[in-house]
Every structure is written in structure tokens, then in C-alpha cells.
Length: 348
Ligand SMILES: Nc1ncnc2c1ncn2[C@@H]1O[C@H](COP(=O)(O)OP(=O)(O)OP(=O)(O)O)[C@@H](O)[C@H]1O
Ligand SMILES: [Mg+2]
Image (cartoon, rainbow, N blue to C red):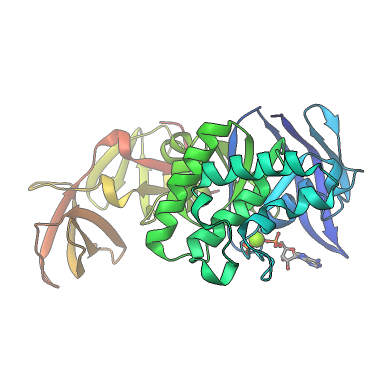
């Protein structure tokens, strides 16, 4: 187990700056999740930690030891990729033990570590099977097993579940959480999946264009996003942003007072999460239903407000609306997010 320090990391490919200035201290045993839009530099950052890519500037230390000049094999890391690329002609046992054999580890020790990893991952019954005789989830477990047997200080995962179907993803997500609880390793995990990020992370790092927008626990990011980018990125369905007016201490949407804020006077963006909007007879937000989606346990109502702004509310699954119906909503003032003209959060 080990800490991981990223200090002033920059990376450019030619004249394209992919990582502009990355600083992060990962605690021993912490599970850090990187999220951000496609192309923002998540994989590049992970590959630099792994040593598969050089840093243009800055320092990487694992367990207090500087590693950015070391080859991948000397860094104490193991990486699991999206495409798990198992050796097709080797069975599960051969795949799990390959790296150790290659590194010249004694056979008795290989057997011990491979058996321990296969127990943890539930692979013991299929050690003689070839990859083609395994399901997608089983193959992914072998890929994770290959990382475990190396007993790394730091695990790196780059979207390891994105090739799996929805049900298997949920299953493997829980498996990874259990694995982390059991091994207690430091992990850095890249994902596009909101739920994976929220449920796995001790802390989430939100990237945009090679810059870290915010680092925090999942609930910190959900409750206090520093700007509209993080606010819109964390949470699903995404937060609604409405043009509103700050008048004195009041935030007004059309003719209604919605919450208070010290934004000063002028235009602001009011952020309302779909799941925080409630059906309310005399609620301050009135709109016309444009689309109504039934999902079983819940429903999404899409509203057009009198000033033509639109919003989505997540409501009870028992409800029923038709396009053209009027719908009135309310929200608790402490669930409202206010952002200034520069898209930065205004403290309540
Ligand atoms: N070897 C390379 N040469 C030139 N440009 C590269 C190279 N590798 C990555 N890039 C560029 O760096 C940027 C960041 O890529 P990266 O793969 O880190 O993004 P990402 O955040 O992992 O995206 P995704 O979510 O799609 O996987 C992209 O614009 C990509 O085109
Ligand atoms: Mg990537």
C-alpha cells in the first residue's frame, strides 16, 4: 500500500497541452475516481502514473519515492484496461501467472499468489478454461486477477467495465468495491459512469481540458459543486440551469421567489436538480408539460416555463401527465444552487 503524489504535472503532445497543471495527493488506501468528458486527459494522466507515457513536466511519487523516471515495472503499479486483452492460448491459470513467470518469480510463489487471487475473484472453478470459454464478466475478473497477483502498491483502472452489459457492470462494480475493502490498496479508477464514480470513490477528481475543476468526496461534489461544469457533470439526470434574477437577497424565477442568496443584483443561473423538484399545489415554479416519461418506479416530467425556459423534474412513478397539462413544482431553498455570470458558485 502507498500514497500517490502528483505535483505540477504537465503533458503536451507536440503543441497540444493535454494536461495543464495537475496536483493531487492520494492517501494510502484511498480510491480516487477520475471523471470528465472524452478527451480531457484522464487516460493520459493514468498512463503517466503507470509509466506508459512520459511527463512533460512535474513529479510523480508513489509511497514517497519519486518514480517518474522509472520504467513501468519498477513503479509498484498494476493497470487494468478497458480492453482486457487476455492471452487467448493460455488458460486462466496461465493468464494470471504470466507476469510473475516473466519476472522470474519462483513457481511455488506463483501458485500461491494465483490461487489467492482466484479465490478472491471466484475464478477457482475455471482455472483450466481458455478466455473464449469465459463470459465477459469472467474475462474481466481474470484481467483484474492479473493485476492482483502482482501485489501492486497502486492499482490503476481505465474504464475496466465499459465493455460489459448493464447488469454485469452493476455486479462487477460491487465486486470492485468489495475487492477494495478487502485489499485496502490505493486505487485510481477512470470511468464515464456516474453511478460508478459516486459509489466507488472516496474522492472524485473532475477534469476538463487537462485541468482539475474540483476534487472532493462524491457528496461534496453533489452538494457543493464549485461551478456549473461540475454541477452539470455530477448527478443524473443532469442539473437544470435556469436564468434567474438576483434582487437583494432574493433569487427570482419569473414572478416567484425561489430562494435567498448573497449574489448581489443581476442575472444569475439557478441550478435545480431534477430529483429535488417536488409536485406542489401552490409551488413557485409553474410550467406546461411537453414530455412525460414513465420509468416504472419514477417518472420524468419535462416542463416549459412561461418564459420558454425548460426543465426536467424527477417525480413519483405513480403520476401521470399529458403534454399540455399544467404542472406546479416546489423545491427546498437549501436544495437550490446559485451561480454567477462566470458560472461560479455563489455561497448561500
Ligand atoms: N499519443 C498521443 N499523441 C497525440 N495526442 C494524443 C495522444 N494520446 C492522447 N492524445 C490526445 O490527448 C487528449 C487526451 O486524451 P485521453 O486519452 O487522455 O482522453 P480521455 O480523457 O481518456 O478520453 P476518453 O474519455 O475518451 O477515454 C485527446 O485530445 C487525445 O487526442
Ligand atoms: Mg480514456
